[in-house]
Image 1: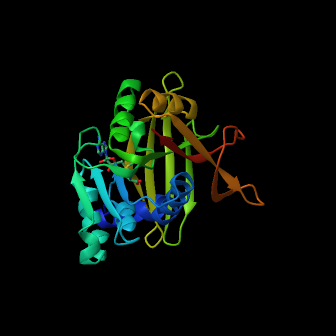
Image 2: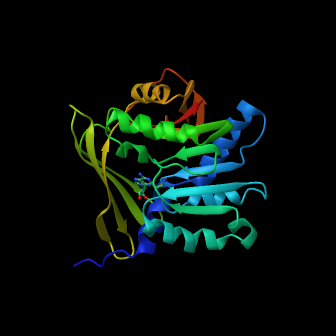
Image 3: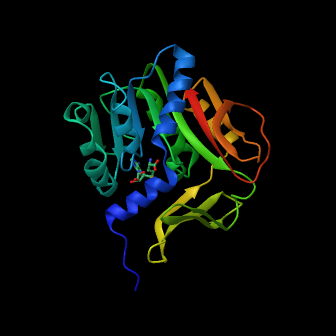
Length: 265
Ligand SMILES: C[S@@+](CC[C@H](N)C(=O)[O-])C[C@H]1O[C@@H](n2cnc3c(N)ncnc32)[C@H](O)[C@@H]1O
């Protein structure tokens, strides 16, 4: 039987495959500055997992602080050991991990609340999603904004396994099933480690509802947001995403895409 990945291997593989906190923070800073002429200082990272983004956030300056909320101590413990403890003591004091539910009330407010890597897809009922988005809105400061991301495309609503080769491993994003009648879907993440050529299957599993951009705009409005901006990714000469996102309300119906959505109260 293949050796099981350790906690540290599992989260290191995950982070290097799907996360880019530096790029996310750069995007948020740029767009927030355009809106309010200053940088956001307090971040709340919902479904934070290891809290990689929240830890990178506090490293920006002494004025920055962050709160990361997640129900599960396993990714939090990895984050504490690998991200929090890599910061100096003064930076650590400005970062708070909360083992808790994003639907609960908290005493603090944030300039930016983020829910990235599509984690809100776990709310399958509209009223649950309205409740979550309302809670995010209630925890924003006066000039606060809420960022989520979304993926979609003609290829994403069907069983399909995609892979991306990295230096030491291959990452697989596997849609096992999609129900066209209610948009319920099951996704897995597998990793193949190149050194031993072992494919570790179903390291992460997601039972989600795949929300679409129009539905999300409506649900965000129902949750009390007045403005919803969608950011589409620009393309390079080969037609591939170039990492630059711009506001859009019309886009090409391509096979696979990822957007940022920003909601303003
Ligand atoms: C897909 S992971 C996302 C991790 C991270 N945000 C990222 O960008 O990669 C989803 C995380 O949400 C957490 N989670 C699920 N339901 C939650 C809830 N109601 N409140 C807080 N965290 C929750 C899970 O424990 C899990 O760590």
